[in-house]
Image (cartoon, rainbow, N blue to C red; front, side, top):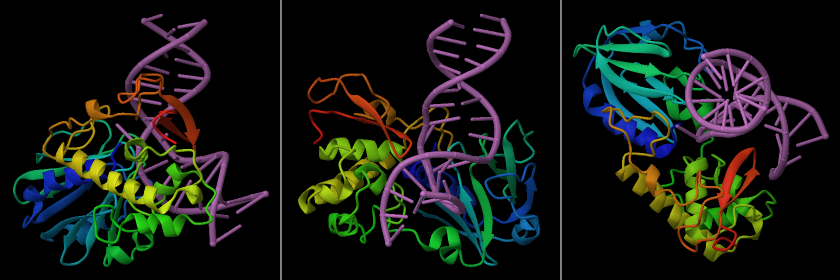
Length: 270
DNA sequence: ACTGGCACCTGGGCGC
DNA sequence: TGCGCCCAGGTGCCAG
């Protein structure tokens, strides 16, 4: 489910309920996520006050004095605040009980997510090699151009590579390439500097816009405050294979690139 | 060093 | 109504 805008929407939704709160207890009902939730998470986190609620790529970082809880939502994960003691339903694997009487509840049907503990999260093996944030200052078209020279892979999986830039998943890669008029099948190394500059702009614009709108609602995604996002009806290409291009009216095509569905307009994207 | 492919897991939608 | 198949927002890891 969650791409970067959904993760950022979640971060903004939960932050006001967590900052300054103390974790009283961690209840793990099922520790079988992508990696097992550490056995000692409760002993490390209990009694700690949450001082920071940050995001790096699609990882949420809940910072306390003794260390940081790293949370990834995988493809189907979500975090929301519930009243402490609310009975857990299926797939509601973890609760952080807070001194406010609320609990931060982690739900993940597919269990592709992760919940890990680290004393230095940015140096954690999962985070240390990540590329720049797409909305930060280290990301621009020049970087895309430079890293793509000599690369034969298609431009779409290239911009989805976390070492190139983080946070560009299938939906927003599809939308940004449509907006930039670039054929997703084109070899990354064959895209000009000028077109990468346009693509970088579109990646930033699409992601920033989606964050403003509260993320894309796919199936049952809800932000930390329980409100659904409203970006979905604004999609130009993602999920619209076989439908009409909103720009030129021709039929959108669908192919698979890097094992992912990729929709594009054969007329608008070259 | 790159590249493509697979795996992890569950649920929803579709065709028969 | 039921069954089986295919697909899904991510990403680490493998072999070639």
